[in-house]
Amino acid sequence: MFQKLRQKNHLKSPFVFCGSDGTRFYDVRRSFTTACRKAGVEGFRFHDLRHTFASQLVMNGVGLKAVQELLGHSDLKMTMRYAHLSQAHLQEAVAVLNKLGDGHQMDTKGPKTKRADTPSIANPS
Image 1 (cartoon, rainbow, N blue to C red):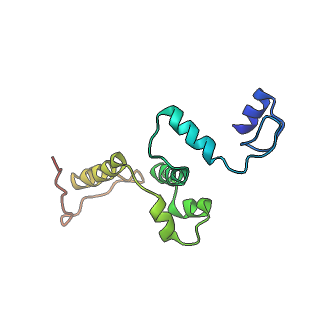
Image 2: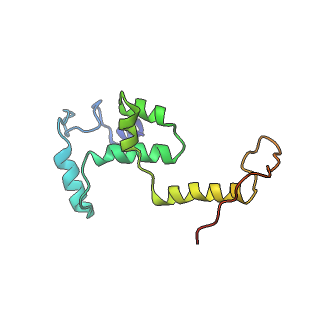
Image 3: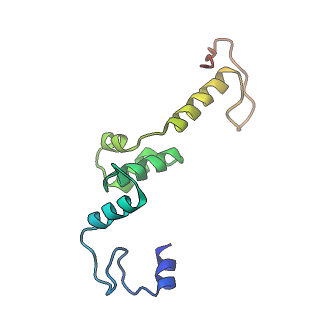
């Protein structure tokens, strides 16, 4: 994406965040704050982008170990602090459990029989 943007705008700098002369910006926080203010976004910090990055990856099926490596965390516990799930994503997880409790097949690898001792999960209304 950045390569296409560079070609379109005839940018020669290898840096994403740079001045018109191609020199690197060492601190983009002020520009980020200005962009948030102009967009009407309040209470969002630059560091929140790391949380958003991790959460979006996990909610789209990327494993926690991969997210850990991408974030550069040495401890999986730290990655867990970054990977927040949205309410909609949590509700989808509960819906999966409800389908299992109703006897629906969730595994496409082949037919399964429902065991007699499989508990049903009530549908919260």
